[in-house]
Image 1: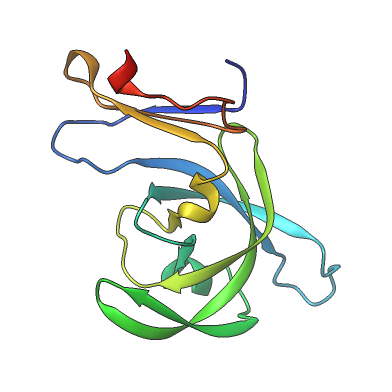
Image 2 (image 1 turned 90 degrees about the horizontal axis):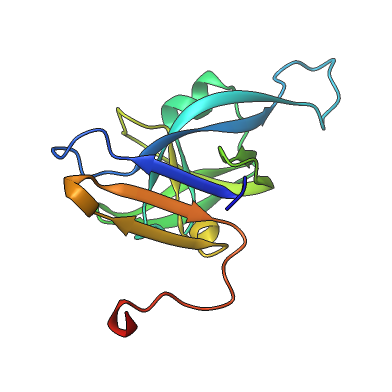
Length: 153
C-alpha cells in the first residue's frame, strides 16, 4: 500500500490499547535559535477515538520546555478543567507530518505522552482486526474513496 500506512500489532492480549512511537517536533528552547527551528523528540502515542483533539502530557510539556500560547477549557471523563495549549509538529511513523498542531495538556499516561485524537484520525482510514488471535491496528492517509462495510462482505 505504500508509506502512508501505519500497521501495529498489539504486543499482547492483556493490554488492549493501541500505542506506537511517533515524533513530536517542539520549538528549540534556546533564545538564540530561530523561532521556527524545531527538534524532534520520540514519544509513545495512544490512539483514542474518544478524544476530540490530540493531547500532550504535562510531563512531556515540562521536559521539552514548551510554552503555552493559550488556556482552554477541556472536558474529559474526569470533568472540566482549564489547561494549557501548545503548538507542536506531529510526525507519524508513515512520514505524514502535521505542522503546528494545537494540542492540549493532560496529566497521567505512564505508557504514553501523546494522545492521537479525532483531529488526526479523521484524516484517514483506520481498521482494527483480530485474525488468528492477534490484534492489529492499521491506519492510512489519505483515506480511500469508498467505505469498508463488513455487512456487504
